[in-house]
Length: 446
Image (cartoon, rainbow, N blue to C red):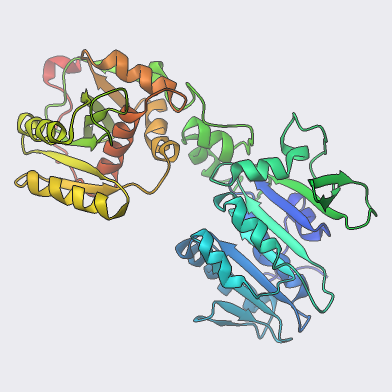
């Protein structure tokens, strides 16, 4: 029968292979745009005619769950299964047979215990690399069916994220060229759990479970392959581009990958008019051989960012406060001041102290929630694109050296300062600039 305009039809190739797989554990994905989330939504529908079926689809946070899974399911499920109903308060789809498909999130490891007494024949993790291994292993204990339904574990994800390593190791035969066991994409292997950990075995071995990796690429998605989505992925920083566009599980943060000397051109004249921020990354310790306190001033004019100055020193808390205040006096009140807020109540109190100390300036506090590499990736992409310049100064060599060594260098305080300043100028806090402003004085524009 020919499919009608309202029918959902799988894309031939990896998506069809994923949906047809009978393996216990399936890792699906690689690059962005490879039909992963859509596939994960459709996969459990194979069993919703069974009254006893219970399934679970998860994202790491609730906003991600609402945006990527729930919204799309509202469009898809009523058409695919007439009579399907969604209960908003419980985040659960109920199907005419009585089968139920729950939607949830596990923002913190402790949240996994919300499923302590649950029983699911199907568990799917969208963006699985955002979950720690502890959560995944616990959820496997909830994978069961007292009615004898087949158990299916499905992961959809790209490389990168906090769970990159455990996924890379668990699917080593497909992803790690150094793994002693090798498997081709789409090839199913069998393993069993022993007192000494997992052991690969042959099909039919007592207690054996199956596992497979099915790669997907944006080029295989006909809905995106002919759009400008691929071109936008090419504009990412080198690490993220390798992970999301190429689906490269071997791409890891390394020296010289996120920042290169050749990407930063040096200028001699600062912008005549621009919006500026001095962002402070304060060291937790005082004098000695520990971290440095860094105050990096970044200017923005239209699409160009100019690193104008870096103050870098070690000092006692009193000396840090005095230097930040003195630097603010020199910069002037037209320069916004960004203060990085450490986690916890002590960080909130300390940030509030700096706000009082700098009364009269445009001072903002910024709470850090992401790891250093993730924070550096947006400005890395702009550096590679040639949109970041550096004002000539005695601090240049040490600064560039630290950038090129990141994240393997002994210090990363200046990188944190640059990441923070860039975020401060691109989060909507900075007002729009007057288009009449000019980047350089006339002589410098030749």
